[in-house]
Length: 248
Image 1 (cartoon, rainbow, N blue to C red):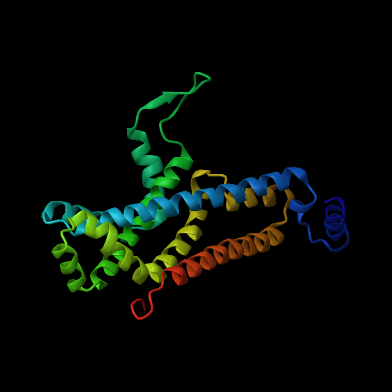
Image 2: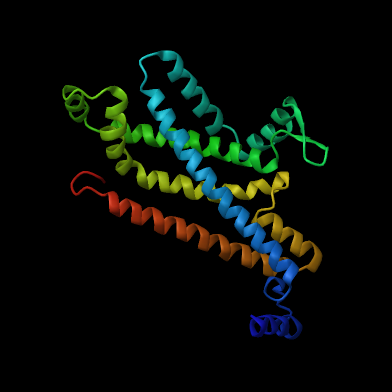
């Protein structure tokens, strides 16, 4: 690592390309912390948004109109409002209604911190889109398949879990992949409430070192790599689940 650090230090002195994250331990630690936070935040939100989407799609098939209306209202609310406004609403408005708790140092702190609200907000936002994605996949399953499951004695829940959803999942994977990519990019909004993700860490660095140009290039390529990995995983998953002659 020392030769690499010396090279980037020389690059900064000789050519003004100041990439401190490669030779300054403090800036490197900040950047790696932001990278880990972004990846962790993305993984948690992806898992929760898929769970929300699956649950909402199941409820939309309920016989009672009340749960169906509740899911439709949830989808319309989160699809028709900006994610930054949703994040601010949860962090500043909803958080103020919750009780304060005492931490181990005896200090009063919010019940849910900024990271928690970011997870909740982004998961609900992406989950609302996932509900519609999974619903479209379920509607693509032939009615004859559903009737065959019922004829074999499957309950509605078992037919959904073992027959309908596995087939629907294959159909909606491309659209799901697009939504998850957008979710990863949306995590940059957590900067607005002080979550130490990549953009927040980069802003800390360029505010002190004044290397905005270099850090913006680093941010750009870092997100390209993160999204490329996600797209690669989704494509491999789609190919592994493909049924010849069934999925699009």
